[in-house]
Length: 122
Image (cartoon, rainbow, N blue to C red; front, side):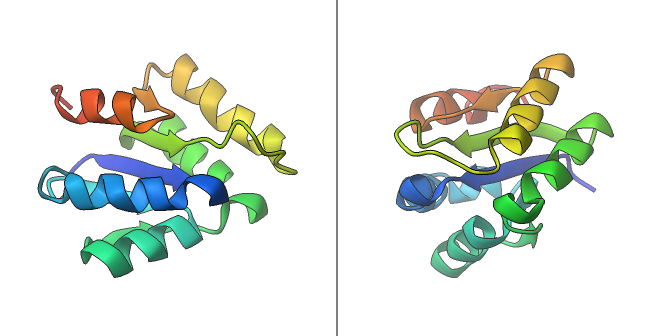
């Protein structure tokens, strides 16, 4: 199985994630894509990319992806974060971000950084 790239986007950033996935669909096809529930559904519906969907972020999807990071199954995490909104599941978000850093996993929180990661050698 190809290494996984995780796609996650807060509600205020889902349109940005769909636009990013459309613009990078050929590169993303080379990876096993995993995503939180709603983000995965939106990206799949708009791009046709095959995506393994986890639970929605607020009910455990961020933690499911964090577990994949710990298991060494994730090549990169692309998580478009909405810094202007509060998130009741912030501890889960911080766990995922922390584990990406602990396990040296490339982490993009905006489209500019995500483009740089995809243009590199994953």
